[in-house]
Image (cartoon, rainbow over all chains, first blue to last red; front, top):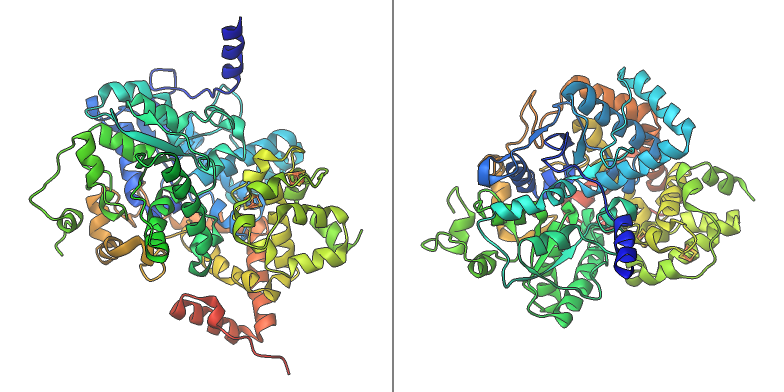
Length: 354
Length: 235
Ligand code: SF4
Ligand code: SF4
């Protein structure tokens, strides 16, 4: 009985995401992330490779984007230059293009802030019919396009994030993997806009975050929990973008890193799913080393880079570990991945000469 | 109840973010900004709930509303279902519409946000461009980031994410002009263009003309620190 009860509770925290073997789960429309393209462009490359790669190199999926889609603009929304009304119509335009121009029924976004914003908008459309009407009317008037609402998760109006799509196929990926995290301790850092704005839209809900933890375990890693695991990375939009505010970002990273080190000094790997976290949790370790003289050497990488490494993609050319503050080589040694040792660390990162 | 509160309560974000706050302080306890700055989302909620226009005016003229990092951790944990981060969004828009944002140092940074996120969106369809995080603005990204910026086109091709492709899918592509026109029409019809204009106007009023705004902007570009521009005392 107790087990049944637990299963029931657990069921409540699950999120339906079509896997590649389920109907529709092999064909997706998607939208890009302006934050990724600016601060971690290689991520868009490795997401694409892992999702579309054939055989043991990926999931062999058909993923499509339209040339005319735009950023959702949510960075400008949380950076206070757009209105929620703006966000709704831009979202509706991107949805409409995916369905009517690309012929897809499933839709994911590569940015976590897009994900949070799309969830917010869909909830408003559901609860306030006049906002739905406003969106339809304004979309038609400004673009001549027809409204469409994606229903990706369990047939109800919803979208999913690229990391959800990877998670839905994680067993398959782990089977194809050439490498594993066997003997490697790792922790996760979920983007706040993935798991906190609408906790029910994240795998495991607000209380039992499973998305990245599930990936770590599927690849054979040992999951580490620590007190500040859910604390924000400090990206903060205007806080990271305007250099004079970035102390905020560094302070958040410092708080997290100190807490992790105190809990388990051997845990040197942190997996992310948000573009901002993936960059700042790494880069601010550089600031902290300079300002506080303290080093943490925690590798920060996102779910797609991790999948790329596990499938045996090149850590530099494919996964983009060229521009990380914390050098990736110690981790490559740990998982037994070969790289060109005849070259210096610098040479490995600079394919076009010094 | 006063005029400012009435204006504030029209914001969709307020309607969905502000129920009855019981001043428990849960939000402040977990808030990243409260730890770093002299800031408390509980206090913000308390002021808005008081509906006192004087207090609201003081709040939206101050640095405080700009301290929030918009993580929305508070939304997840508020026992009353409030969303202090959402209330902040509404307060910031009111501050921009009334020009009061220009009264505070952090508020004046909105010119930077507008010219970065806003103008980028209207010009290219992205809030951030590959050419924005330049090494002088992101020294912590280190020498390898400098190298990447020196070889930006080749590096992106090498990673399989070429930039600025025309009439093509892809990361950092050129969004076709007809699509950009649709986007601009949306920004105009939904009030985003007006909001951005308010930022430029509010800054011109505070600094003493458009030329001064350009000097502020240039000073930020040159020094990577907006605080080094000194506002002239009004005679
Ligand atoms: S957590 Fe909610 S109820 Fe408590 S002080 Fe913050 S907003 Fe008010
Ligand atoms: S959204 Fe703002 S107020 Fe809420 S926890 Fe984050 S920083 Fe604090």
